[in-house]
Length: 239
Image (cartoon, rainbow, N blue to C red; front, side):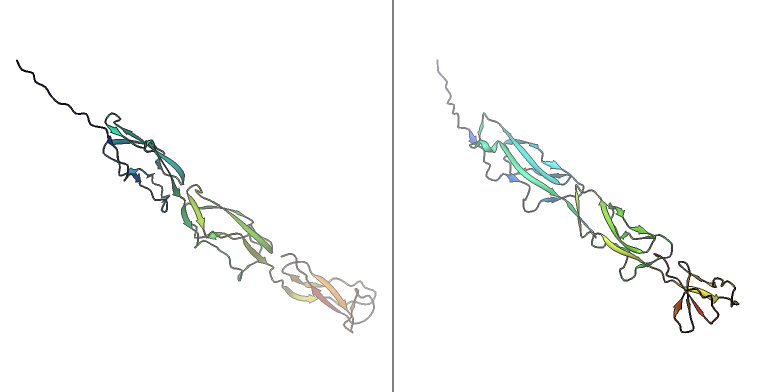
């Protein structure tokens, strides 16, 4: 008879090398929101491990904390440092910029409105897509100085405004008042009652009259015999 034998060798577990493992994200160059999902993951992962991720995907602007959980064959491999079992990374998606540099008020301080009885309005022009506006004090009818305010509505979770115009001071100037017609005041005989001047009207406001003697001195409404002068005036109104 004969005896047949065999030799068996059990090796130590191999170490898993994490030297070249890193995240696919550069802190100095974060993502910028563009409406598409962003993902970060580990690169340089050894072939003999599997990775499960948490919070490594996002679409909206913000700061996130990604977690990578490492799984491997513990019977045949060894990780010398337990910190490699769970890897974390803080990462960000920046807000995208909305350039408001071309947005302006449709009003020039060198060409203010003039009162004409119609409502005047100031508003912003060249607004980018996705921006809506709420105004305050941007409409008026009467002469005066106004301050128009503006509030922008947009997706401020994912965008920020650059160069947005602020409030605007704008004016409606008073209209020029004119008097038209020919002033008429009939002569009277002493003892009669002097009537009211007529024949003229003001574009804005009521007519008032002043009386003067022959020396061009202002007097009250004359009652004595003499030669007098009358002038018509209109101080206009607020507009």
